[in-house]
Length: 205
Length: 205
Image (cartoon, each protein chain N blue to C red):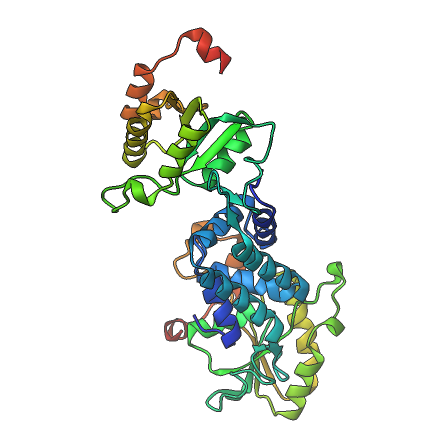
């Protein structure tokens, strides 16, 4: 692609480093900015940089935070005896958006993956054990993606925390609401039959 | 959507002001930046701002430019006697990418649109007339979108330049390569029959 100006080319290439944005889309974004006020571009440029420079990680749960402790860990209305273990901060947003969970979180920062060379020591697992030991945690809910890495991580953590008096659960896996049996893969369908629920339990969900 | 931090929320909202980027995509971009080095974010932030702050418009053809004259107007290998008239700088990039045009350009900055209250005085038409008058232009190629506004603009400019010895042409309109007759709209098909070409001409295109 030929660009009329080096400045445009640099901006297009910068946008195109973002995921899901190719050169054509990047050019469209640049053209949009050129047609808007300078203030708008300044605002976007500042907001991105400030976010990246000033962001911190919560000392307790490793969630993204404006301060040393995140807004969930400092919220006295949340149940600190229950920890929901997630892979990354995106998953916290997903769980929070359900508005059906009132405990605290723990961000692992990844999943155990022998193939990719990610061992337990590269994840925030030690701090999780410390929390369980020191804070009399009653329940750990494993909310990890239903993959081999996810299952490996659940297995490792449940072994590790075996010596503490803590209940370890995992979020239910099965047929999604609105899904059709006909199109569900065999593993999901088999698992959802194995872990079938009494009708009353099902209704209460 | 709930955000773990005000900084994240600001950055997401900033990204979401761009066309085609919603809150979910914006969040994905922010998460991507958080997982990359600070330098990467700095680079994007700087490139965008620098582009918007330092960009100029070419004094001759109103194309985007790093200097007072754009790289096309200062290129001595380009034919300065032919001007391709386009609506905006995006169209220049489109024509340049064909690598089949070696003349100069003139960016109107819009199309005449009585409904939207855009008259000829709001466009770069006066400077086009000056160029035709002063530079002994031989041909004006109108490369405008085939809409009512586009046709109105072509009509106005051809009337205006009638008094000069300049040939005014328009890019050909017809069935696109790879298009199927069956699915072409009536206006395009009718026009392409009216402006049919001798077989030899067609082959030479």
